[in-house]
Amino acid sequence: MRVVRIDQRTMDDCAICTVAMVLGDTYEQVFADRWGRYAQVDNKTSWWELYFDEEGRRVKYLPLAERKVVQVNDSNVLGVLGLSHPTARKGHVVVLDELGVVDPATGLPEHMGFARWRAARMSQGFVLDSDFLAVSERRIRNGLQKTRTMPRAIRTPDDRRPRVTISSRSADCWPSWVAGLISWRSA
Image 1 (tube, rainbow, N blue to C red):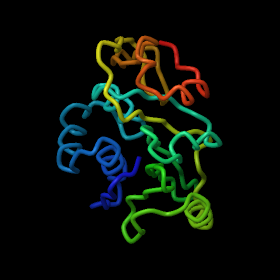
Image 2: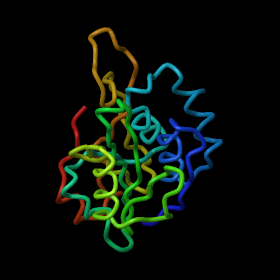
Image 3: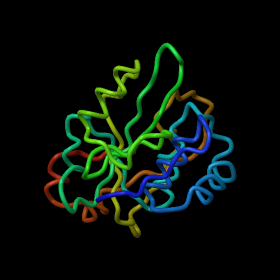
Image 4: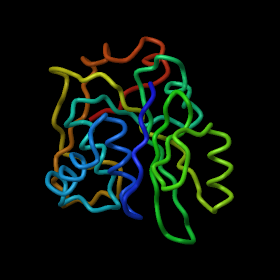
């Protein structure tokens, strides 16, 4: 599956651009939702996990080495990859699609091959996460379960924000060859 690139508008809105690209929504819609629906979630939390779940998308963290699930023709899976710059103390997220990487940072091409993009970002001091969030294109119906855990971040005992996770009843939204590669997270 291929996405259409959305450029960053500020230095810190890469997640808004990335979520909009994955969902096929506008920047304005995701921006409004980020600060309307998820204002209580700080920037150190992967708020987009909540967003994807609430939009009915199947999500699962996979090792970066398994990015082939998004890099095949006609895949219905996209990826969200995080990277960080330890010296500058900043993070960034990009989309993985069948053509490679779609980086919302200003001045980059529409798509870059993964190896070329990785080399460029690593030469700038960035460190790639060892895993990425695989997001199914298809919406899931009647397969969501509410749980009381937080998305990928530091969790504290007093956090009570709900998180939606995917039940095993929804496995039919993934191609069978993808389902065989991964085991779904448990609630």
